[in-house]
Image (cartoon, rainbow, N blue to C red):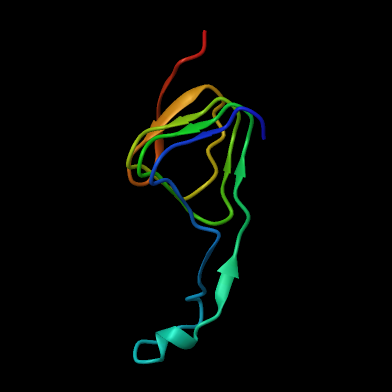
Amino acid sequence: EDHVHVTARTVLLCHKKDLKDYCVGEDYAKLPYRLGEIHLKRGCSTGTGTLIMPGVTIAPKIIVAAGSVVTKNLDREGWLYTGIPAKPIKSFLK
């Protein structure tokens, strides 16, 4: 959406290997991919080196700190998220 800021080395990963039927010893290269759209809502921002996994939605006015890994939806509008996995730290809206 509008006013989204994606910084250097942010990775938007829209696919990953589907491991639900994987058994050790099988050929990993032959596993199918699972796709997932990423939605960045109005006014959100990612720090340098952020990794965003498939199927994630980031709500409006969220800041994701540098080096964070987003594995699930971030839904607290106006919050700073950080960590691996990203968790809400504090609100910056009044």
